[in-house]
Length: 550
Image 1 (cartoon, helix red, strand yellow):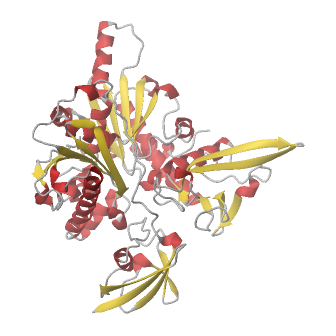
Image 2 (cartoon, helix red, strand yellow; image 1 turned 180 degrees about the vertical axis):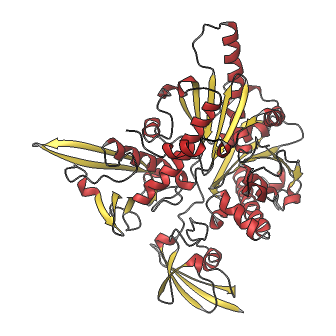
Image 3 (cartoon, one colour; image 1 turned 135 degrees about the horizontal axis):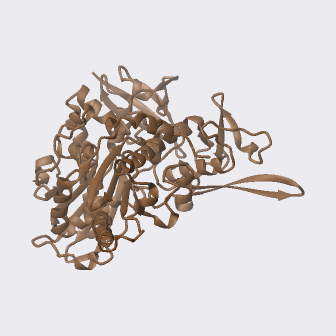
């Protein structure tokens, strides 16, 4: 049976759209077909409550509602995903001298470097005879409708194997769209793009190539494939570049995928570690540290320690909090997202008052808060004692910031933006649940850093340079990251380097010079991968890491 679903979208410009869908279609899928994807932060499990809508006058969760008759649906703006077509990305040209010494690929005119992240996608188009000319695009990963973390997506494939083809089609179609957009920007045909260099975490690379990631859902979390065969676009369903060659970066092991291999290529920490080790051998009295650390902060926290010329890797399940997922008013780093938060006090006539200053991406009216803004906000509340070490809010009656507290569903919340200022007319809050989600993410990252250093009998002070990659790596303040415990306080600020999207940067160099492609294969073969959860003290370290330091 075919039914009609009339959607009334309560945006600034009220929009009505009617679609025809078969019986048993999930309402979230019907909304996406209407061109208005809904928030499903929990992957459709019915636990986040973000897709709350009105169906024939009754309040329901769209992810738990199937179409069995003609429906009239009212969708509030709070249930809609924000405009995520353009996600803020930033990379650096890490190779200070290598950029000028690239050996160009022969037989190719245009190529694309692509980063396939759990939450966001990014791509660059390069002209091989003019590598300084580059076009870029980015967008949200459409697979988010089926879970905001890779574990949820793996579980869906395990429960329903046909989901593998569905998830692959989503990501392939998104890449097709990005390649089309890039070609339009460059004024070429998509078929002129003859080479793709792809980097992503282990699960995303598997899904992109149509490889079943199910073994990663069970201990010992072994990836079915660690080195991917070179294929052509037609092999995986890419319509824009059917004859294009696809080179996918290999993985280090487990959940440490091609994105972190790309990060090592971009930052060259393996070379720097060898150079520092050579200096120590020549001069044993030197006190300079020789360890280099790289962390890619995103939905998955992937870690690399280069020490004594060796590469040690591990992965942690950070969750989507750093990219706005499972946060009450969280969103990606797009226009209108709060990315900076600062609390200030001033005294006038003996009375101390508190002020709250927020800034947004693009200086647009605030819509929600992205990862860097979340880190800033919690850091500031910790600085003024408004959050306890265990993560509980500390509502002080004598605090100059008392007026920013409100009750939300019977629990205290901190008002970042009032409803009068908010773009949606709804206040942007920081809730107790948000703090808990951030604690879980911080605990995973912090525990991973501690355990990886412990395995080599190192201290944070032994790290010469601490590289931070990830979609929002360039936007967080290092002092805020250290205050909340995301980065070790023992590492001097001058040793911390924020690198932006190292996955895309590494894919770029692999694209432009085959030497880096070959090097990635060697690096993956010789790295030492550690499954942190198998370590006897993992649970204890992880639990302790969730507490905020005083």
